[in-house]
Amino acid sequence: MGNDSSKEELVQLLKRFGAYLTVKMSNLFSISFDNLNSRSLGALAGLAIAIVFTWRLFRTPPRHQRRQPKRLAPTPSTSGVNTHSDGAPVSPGICSSEDSRAQNVIDEFFQPVKPTLGQIVRQKLSEGRKVTCRLLGVILEESSPEELQKQATVRSSVLEVLLEITKFCDIYLMERILDDESGEKVLLALENAGVFTSGGLIKDKVLFCSTENGRSSFVRQLEPDWHIDTNPEIIFQLARFIKFQLHISPNRSECTASNVFCSPTLEQFFGFPDRN
Image (cartoon, rainbow, N blue to C red):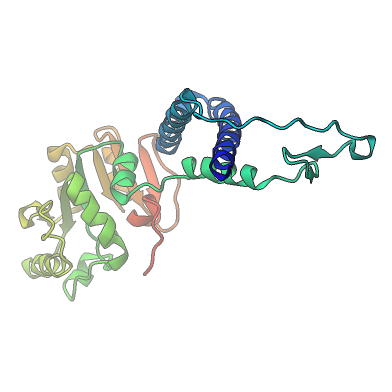
């Protein structure tokens, strides 16, 4: 008897499971396919698995079904109150334990999947594979060539994002310096931060020049998919030559062209807060 009761309970649970799937399906497919993102596609995959799972279970009915007892007709005193299969009254609007369990199963299928940092980088960079980026004010704490004559410090909050970009993209770092010693300080700071250990960035891809126009010339020669800079004049000059640009500015200045994006920091562009 206990085994038959468990089977009947499973059948009831699956019926409620199917009802919830119908509601979820109607909500999901009400969204335009043009607006589907990775999270929606994950939900679709979960929905497909759930449908196949439910269908396979319903294909084979239980071998032994106990005879259903005759149900008593509801008395006038119970009008407006639903009764369970065992005759126990259930108030309208109150979910039974089976309803709650079915709801929990459905919710597990539709839990949002948090994208990885690598997925965020690829999505935000529109699958671009070559990136050029200036150092001052983006990768380094210092903001002028004069400061580099004293020291060079890699921003700790940008390091995780930078390392992920080096895994996915062919990236070149560049900066204007006043002397060779400044360049050596920059390379040492990058090395100590572990930027060269990932294998995606080598010292030969850290370029130095003596003028701002020299940095602009580097970018045009490399023809990247993305260029990242803090100088609005260089951003403006390169807008018609480079597919995408990211202007790093703490003042959140307005973007000068449709292919130019703006962000206070590089990490915030990828959804990471500035923890400095």
